View (cartoon, rainbow, N blue to C red):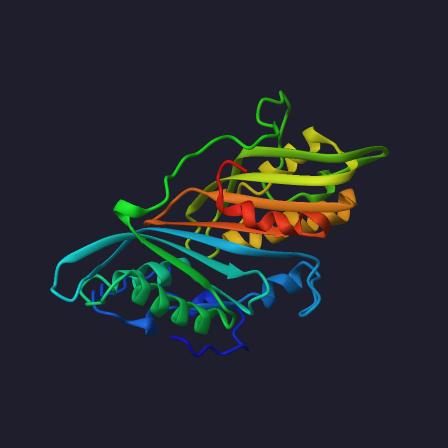
Length: 285
């Protein structure tokens, strides 16, 4: 599956998404299915090698297991950081199938498993992917707190757009904001291949002209019937806000609901918020 024809109109068409795939429980790196990022970025007017953002795709794996050298199961939590400038993203069902292939394979510890996953994901993404693996008993505590900003969801507004409508976005150039964090739990889009819903929360942090909050919420909801992968949706939001509202600095982060033991949390930022990427792993930020 790793060799793909770049001339395909839909690079995801050969992925395991939407198909019945045989379950394999012994180590099988060939299950990983990379998808080039550039075709969807070209739709947004982004030129390869000249991205307007930095960032990463943060994956959390909650169903990771293998056998130790004596055949006893180990259960663990994994975290994978895929850089936003990697040529490929990794299709989520293929990653789930790949992780399942560890279930009946023997490894001598978390460090070996992390090294093996890091090697395979880096090869698929064509960039260095950082991997951390912890036994479940030693995993860092998982807490969730609301972001320290303004929740948009209580705004009492009419909404009638459910496909991407960037023209809704606008900002007030006469009112400058030093730094503001706005967020919503109403993010929903659909899988590019299966059309199944993806649910998430989105956080937008910016400085510059004050973004109209009602317009921003309408825009977020306008993604409700849109079909794109998580990573592509976040880049669409970033580019639309950047072009329509003209912030001085901008960061966009989504925290999608776990599906199949995995969640994907893309982060994109520019300017001084680029360093905020380190906090994207922390649901409290």
